[in-house]
Length: 107
Image (cartoon, rainbow, N blue to C red):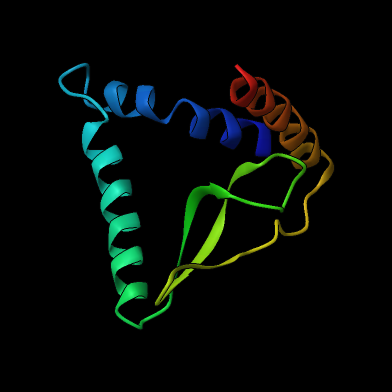
């Protein structure tokens, strides 16, 4: 089940287009994600801490930047939260993602 969910998540944009029978795109999904992030940042800056995923400078992995759950507070990023417990499949996929991300950061 997890590999199937992983594939669907990875191909989410295509899933949206297919669900709309080719009559649209996943633009609204991306806009919604951006709006959630913006709302979390603004709430945090206003003194109402929020947690959302963001691509930030991080010491969670050996990479200088990583997407993590982030707590936003009055001064912006208050805390980068650790990656939770992973099963074997998730550990393998995380290693693959880090290798790809490392390559993209270095080029």
